[in-house]
Every structure is written in structure tokens, then in C-alpha cells.
Length: 279
Image (cartoon, rainbow, N blue to C red; front, side, top):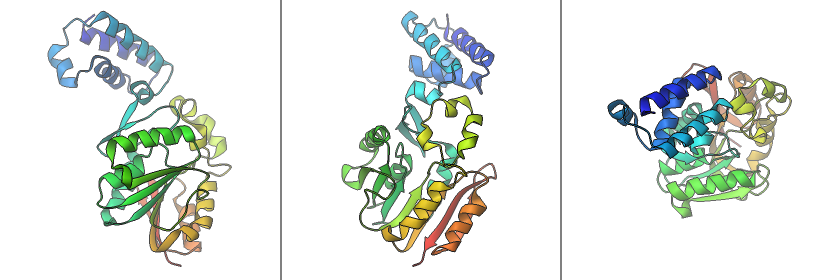
């Protein structure tokens, strides 16, 4: 089959399986399999595909029909203009999270010490360190498998002396104080996980999704424990669920935080809550 015929076949199979954005995923998997870009497909779409590569492509399409995430099939995801390694042990970095990174970068300055709790793939911490000067950071996660992914990403994108990754339950392995605390913790209420898209529900790590009964468990814990790890004037940034802005904002205002702000994402939904720690 030609490239064009293959991508048309892939699109039909994915559409039949009710995969969202079937045409786009079919094209992206073709580009990944044959190591070509969109322009190559447009210009050389009538070329016959290599037989072995065609079989590989067909196998990937069938896996995508099983709702295995595209990023797990290709092993990578772009975030903040960088390519991050991902697998089933970490949440796939999402564009909504870029909102938080962009907001943080507006006020970052050289020499800051950053703590990233529930670091996962490391995409937040690594992006902050990549786009700032003379800063260093610590990423913490309970999952050793996730930390292996984060270390691989960091090794490819930032100097070794800029970062440390620690395994533990939130602040458990942490020492010292920080100028900035950032976290994208599990925030989906346990009872809502079953309604998520199959790509998320069945293929992303549940421990990175489950925010316990009301989805607010980890925000409460972090806010209770963080004063022992922050300098006065430190900034704290949380990614939140679309309906959690008022609750997280209230929790921060009831503690030693000022200038608490809820920031919306590109879709107009609450996405980030941030504040300044004033002991």
C-alpha cells in the first residue's frame, strides 16, 4: 500500500473504534513509524510503503484501537517545546499544565530553589530549570518507576548538577527550604475515575490520578506540611481540577498565604491556584 492508502486505512480503523481525532492519530502514527513528516506525506504520499514498516504501522493502529494512548505507542510527548519520554508509569504531560509553567516563569529569577511534589515525568521541574538561569530543583514522587522516567528526561534536557529526584511520600524525603513549591498532585475524586476516558482510566497510573474522596486530599496535606519547607515570601503553585478553584483558594487563604489567585486555562476553566507564603 502507499503512504496515503495506509493512513486512510488507519483513520477508518480508528474511527470505527471510536477513537477521538482518528485522522490525526493515524497520520501521527504513520509519521512515527516511517520517520517522515507531514510534508513528506503530502509530497510523497503515492510511494509504496516498506512491507515490514507497514506491518509495524498496522500493529500500532490496532493497539490504538484498544485505546492505548498515542503517547505510549510513540514513547514521547511534547511539553513546553521539549520532548519528554513517557510510558504507563507517568501521567502524559498536557497542554493545560503548560499554563502553570508559563505563569511561574513570569516571576522566576536566578538562584531559586524549587520543590516539585508528585513530579511524575518531571516535565514541570525540568521545564522550569531549562528556561531559567542558575536555579536548582528537587522532584519527589512515591513511584520509583516514575522517577526512572523523570531522571531519563532530566538527563537529556538539563545539567546534572541542577536537579535531584527523591522517592517518598510528599515531604518525607525532603530537607531544607525552598523559594518555590509547585505540584500537580492527584486531584480526581475516587468516585469519578470510572467515568474518565479509557486512555486515562485504563492506561495512566491510578496513583497519579486518585485524589481520594473529594479530590482535595493532597492539597490539604501539602498546605499543612509545607511551612517547614518554605522561605518567607515563597510562591506556591498548584494545578487543580476545573471545579476546585474556590476550595483550594479558601484553604490557602485560611493558612499563611497572601495574594492567592486562581488562573484559568485556554478553555476558560480554572486550572491553577497560586499564592505567596507569609509566615
